[in-house]
Length: 329
Image 1 (tube, rainbow, N blue to C red):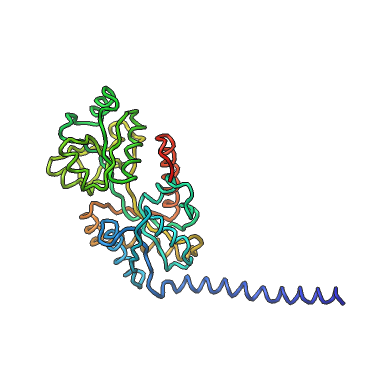
Image 2 (tube, one colour; image 1 turned 90 degrees about the vertical axis):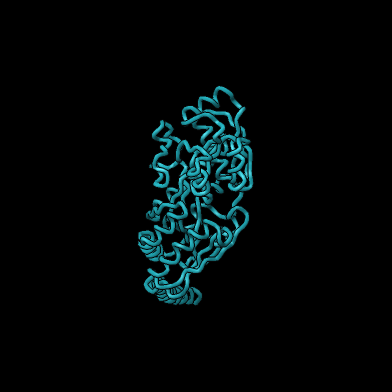
């Protein structure tokens, strides 16, 4: 009797499992087909009104129009973006919670010992959105007109010159420059670009690498001297300034990118729809014009290209941190 009963229960279990599996698969397909049918939340790990927030809002407005649903910005600043990113990693993988991230997303993977998420595997990349060039500038009190002249001057006087950084990202970018050029430059930290600019102009600090957006007005006023940009091609904002590759420093490329992520295991059909509509929104002339005013250049990608970018940047910054002996948080 026990044997017969066991066989009967197994047949009943098998009969029950099949319909459930079909139902779940059908529900996933239906949700992907109807997606989106309600507003989408976009988490931004910075305060409202800042440059990152404005870029996110500019893109989200046109992106939402193409999706047929509004995209609502949810500002969650703090802890170097870790608070916002953790909330998205733990959100339902249904396409209704996304995150707008910058290059600091990969940088955090190198800086933190124990992040509550994995910068690559805890997310489904949607695609990149913009790229902003870091630019190397020197104080007008420094009598150099090229990177070659700057490197020669520093090597002739190791430890004499200093550089300003307004963020961890700027510091690591400068540390990468030091490693690529083999130079010894003293680090002077500041709280923001607004503090570094007058210090550079006055000559109290000598060198900085920062986003072109924050330095552009002072450069155009001829109060800072630009030497090179850290993107593969010249910046349309300062086309006369060469790239590092052009002057023989191909190992120094550190563009500040932005992009969008979804929680891991978000259905592939939803990711594909988000990617295609994002890239369409990025081609909108109004979006491109507004982003250009914020010194950002539109740059879309596939989800896989974005995944590879994040992984490569995380590995590169981890190497920079180790070689510079910067303690992990």
